[in-house]
Amino acid sequence: MGSVVWWVSACSEWLCEQAERCRVTDLDGQSGNPDRLASEGIAALLPSLARLMPEIGARYWKAYYAARASNWPMAAWQLDEMRKLLRLGEITRPKYTHDIEEWIVDDLEPLMAAVDDRDLVRFERHYHEAVDAANEFHRRWKKAWIVWKLPDAPPPDLDLVHRAE
Image (tube, rainbow, N blue to C red):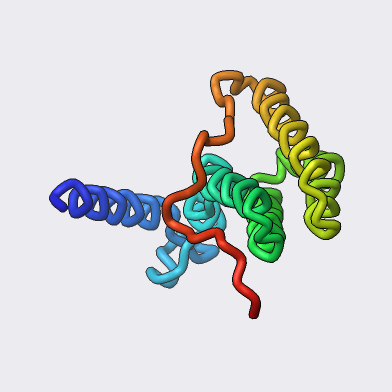
């Protein structure tokens, strides 16, 4: 518990430092509204891909095991939520927009179509191809040390058994 308290305290301190550094000033150089941040301050608070990717990876992992359990609604939902996170990444880190869109169109959309068709064979093929493509983007962006892989077991936090609504 102590490490969580320390982490929250450290994050709060960092945010305060960022806010102070990025305060809005009036045209005459005087401090403006102390409760408003300049655009640089707001940008510093937005999630980077480094913050979004762990959730994206978790959703991708859950989608795989949901499909394997024939829980197609769960697989579709996880992939859709993952796409929303990727699009958020396009907004917060626009230099990656082209590559993210390429991955969505070339890899995620065929995967989502396989989910819609409830085609596990096609889903697994597209899934592994998409992992390879994502890892290729890591290499392209000089982050070859990031290599995502599918965990060997289903996520322990979800019961993946499909239940009729």
